[in-house]
Length: 163
Image 1 (spheres, helix red, strand yellow):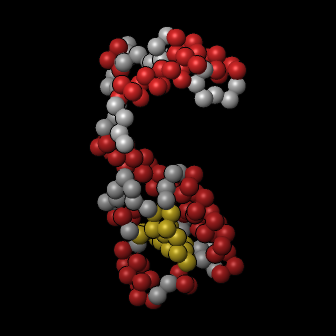
Image 2: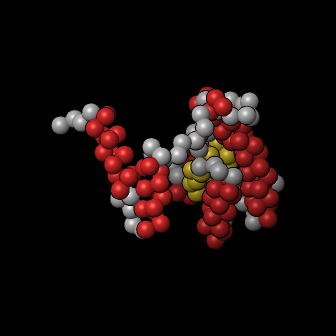
Image 3: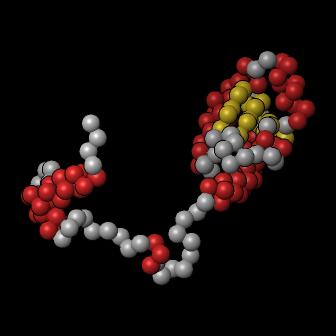
């Protein structure tokens, strides 16, 4: 059963006049006051804002801004991973769209770990935390757990980060 907009509006106004469905006397008093004024206070319409700037950002602008942030994050990630790899006798292989530079706003960062077994978990944790700190989504795989054909294909197009 569908109620008309007027019935719903009248019901909401009555709730406001009575103090509404609230959990404290303070909230009830505020609801009664707002109900007496005709409803809750509204913000100024966007057209009346004095900033003169656009009141919203379009989806394409948000995607472009995210891609720019992604590119800056990848540059910083390369530096961090190279330094860690140099200090811990290993390599990170950056592959996929991040290595090619054709990433999208929602791309992840594909990383293959090539570290001694004893340092692998530390290298993984460092890569993951570095990506998260830069608001990048990591997809990390240790080389020893990957298929040989996969490693060969990745190695041909990867950017090796070792400092």
